[in-house]
Amino acid sequence: MLFNEHMGGEEHKTEELYAKYLQFTGLMLEDYSSLEIAAVMATQALSLYRTCMNEEDYQRIVKSIYDKRNQVKTFDN
Image (cartoon, rainbow, N blue to C red; front, side, top):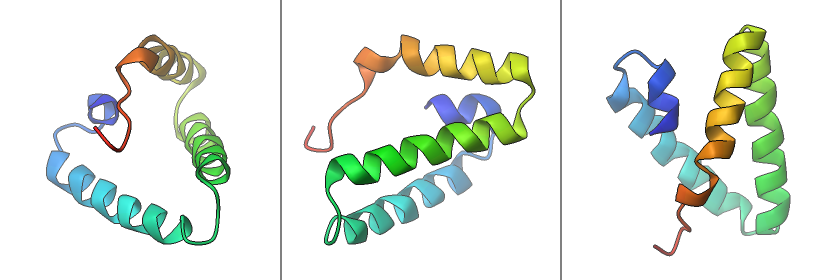
């Protein structure tokens, strides 16, 4: 997973966080559209990256996300 490249081996915690966030997203789908949720999540993610990374690392991760855009799976796969 892309985010584990910067996590330093804390894969179990990351998987737990992912599961909790997925559950939260499911709850939000009851009241909001998928596009609304995705827009908020993407904005928050980029803001978090920009906040905690230096400019070089931020640019590298944004490029990595872009480069892997065709590898992204849908939730039904």
